[in-house]
Length: 301
Ligand SMILES: NC(=O)c1ccc[n+]([C@@H]2O[C@H](COP(=O)([O-])OP(=O)(O)OC[C@H]3O[C@@H](n4cnc5c(N)ncnc54)[C@H](O)[C@@H]3O)[C@@H](O)[C@H]2O)c1
Image 1 (cartoon, rainbow, N blue to C red):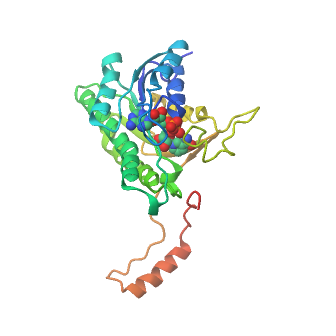
Image 2: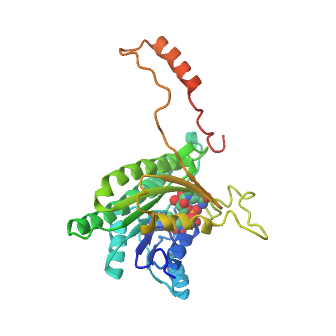
Image 3: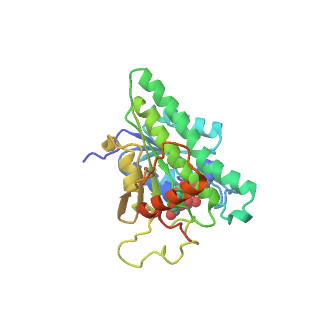
């Protein structure tokens, strides 16, 4: 039986553990050759002993698949450039990029240091932009050479970026930024044969096991709804040729559930046709709000 990623070459960032590892193994199980990136950092981004990417490559090879490791920092130009080059130089092509790497530095905003703001914005937002930029440049050259690819990018946002999350101002801002990046990339890159979507996952990984210890506990029997492997089938499908026509979308996914997230759109509106007075605009805004849908609750509020 043919697998849905036969012949495809897939790059997954932060694939040494957690969700990225599950995605890499799932792509390989569906016939893809995989570049497994991981810098091997701690939960807060501090340097770790070594990259766990080689271990995931060994797992893929042991199961009969093909993979190579890349240990670079995806939030640097050299790390992103060499990551995309690793796919093209090793396997002669690139079909799918999954942006997944990241870490947390949670603090309430009044206590959030500038360094913790910068580090989290850098790893998530710049760490999505740079691999995306280098992959897009490769696909643009392919398209211009008459070889328009069937290319896919899957970005990783979060419920924190969609609704906000207490104590995660830096992370929520970065993950909301990833949604904006996804929308623009989908619109700009369509002409080169590239589809770009984002997921907002939830799963038990080292990133969440402390925060959600009780809900994340593995069941002793039955379906383990919080296993990271539950998120990967959607990522594999979005990263395959089978998702033709799906782009610029955001999906929440956890356990056995997939939800299409419906984003900002114009709600109740009023137009005076002239400049408002502050009092008058205030009265109008209150009337509009009475007719508008309430936003979802901020996580943790
Ligand atoms: N686990 C969840 O419930 C959840 C929820 C929403 C969003 N996410 C997002 O999913 C993604 C994966 O998270 P996870 O839970 O698997 O976390 P994780 O800590 O298990 O895995 C993240 C991996 O990224 C790697 N990494 C960090 N910085 C890197 C860099 N600069 N270059 C290369 N690799 C780097 C780490 O070494 C680590 O192996 C993250 O973007 C996270 O924000 C996770």
